[in-house]
Image (cartoon, rainbow over all chains, first blue to last red; front, side, top):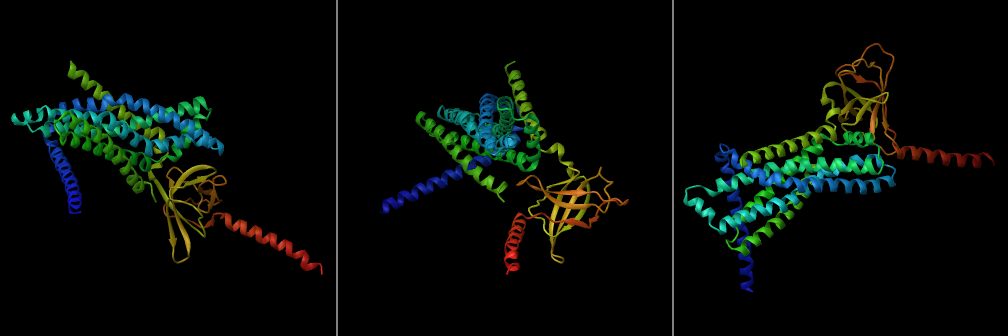
Length: 259
Length: 161
């Protein structure tokens, strides 16, 4: 009985300790900003591996999500004789929800896991300790550029996803199913609000970018320096990021769009 | 060379992302038709505004000339005080204009329709529209219709004996 109580207490303390380590790491990453700004090349290098290399999967999935929305939306809306509002449905669901959320999930799988594995391996092969031996702070040199690269890349990727998706919906709705092109755009423009819909979508993707990159970096930095430890950390990154994104999305949606 | 190609692709990526944001702002949202709140404010009192909401369009002859910018309840007269922002270019609307709340379609959103009067004085900042007509509330119309129907049914019975 006491043993079990002790085990519960220990897991609770471990959890709290890891939350504390994650926040300390975040603080040190943010403190590295002043050292990173004079060396933009580090950031550009990371923007390439985090952002540019994710563009392909984002563009392709955005196109297909938009086309599926066009097909399914037309099926439901035409039953009510409201096929002309297809543009509103496609754009609203992409800009408000699917754009930020699906981008964040893909980002966690494509870039987050890579970040964790890279940092975990750097730790396992003692490259981080090597940097420290050379009096270079590994957090400022390695983690800070990666964090800001993720933070900057996510809203851009989400915007790309939404824009391509709207075009994909147009492709299917107008090209295939015969919705009027003018109605598609004008109904969309009449309903979608710049502040309420698009800015809130960008805020969402900023929050997701922050969270996903933070989780990925923390898991990599905190992983056990063995192959099994790195593999477990990579799995945890994807799982925790997905859960965090979906949970945060609910809270953000309730705050932004709930009345 | 290697670094340079990385920099170029990152630049292209960021440009593409920003272009996508602009595309969303200009092509998808209502930025181009906002009017930016630039205009003069007029008020009108309604007995009942139904489901009218802030930002609802204000139309004249079917053309949008402004938006509803504020809705308040007047505790003195028990009326709804609706403030509308009319775009500055429409500065020749007569001051005896009639304001009426319409519904777009059977179940659509509600908007204010203005019908021009004959006065030679024009509306300006702070003017109040004196003549208004409330929204049609579907339940009241149905209630009235049923009441009339019931009345018709009773009359002949009362007259015959």
